[in-house]
Image (tube, rainbow, N blue to C red; front, side, top):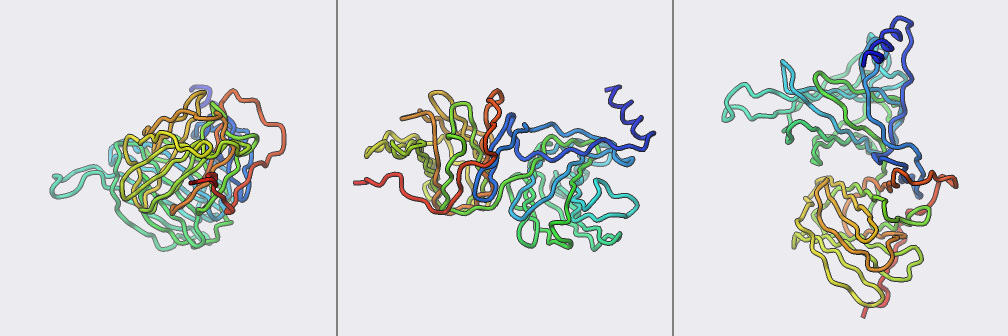
Length: 372
């Protein structure tokens, strides 16, 4: 710790700033394949822990990144208590500079979150109010500030997503929609994102994904998903049924796994159809989906089984009924897909071939052609 402080002090004296890191593209502990328009792209860098740095006299978490329409910035912060409040954190989406100095530069979107302390009795005033301000710095001047109050639904962890739509940002917290912020400056102005907070920490931040709608067929890259891999699907449920079906790389066995979500029955059913025969259905332990709420589905693949998690909670474990390697999936039904990521094991050899592989297309077909 002393070495870090000395380094920051030396950098200040010499008028130098540390190099600004590129924002991570995923949250995987090893390499990953991330969606990039109609294919998957290999990302060799594992997720990194955000760290404070001194930039032009300001202590911030700073990252290089642009943002294109459809992408989402995923954030996990800790809003810990201070003297005046229960934690605060701000985020800045900046043009050309990693920090704002003396009103120079442009801040495409400035967000500040302040978690209030409960001063009055609960019947008079709700606990855990989250005070939010949003604004834009344009031509050296702040524009009209937007103020709002929302409910803080956690203990101290603050999961936040910011998705770039055609004409606005969509801001969600705890998976729930918070508000829209309409662009006052073009999206392509953004080249840096920074964050800072009083008595608060940034645990994770990454950017990725794209907006996709079923029907969707994803041919997995580099030979498919094998034991040790994790598949991450980010989406927003729509109070309607949907299904995700998987087959082997050569499509010899039919449906090796189907995950069927039924909103009216509030069920998640896992099954397979090898050849012409459906197997024994496996019912999920609970129903994790809610209309208009974002979800994070993880499927972790092991030697003999796979386990499905939604928002970190286990839903079901399913035995492999054919091969332990899955070649592609098809998604049917009504939901918004925000991202698909394939995490490789940490010790997996680095990919040395084409950086693009696999396929994403709306041209799907039934794996169970021989239904009778």
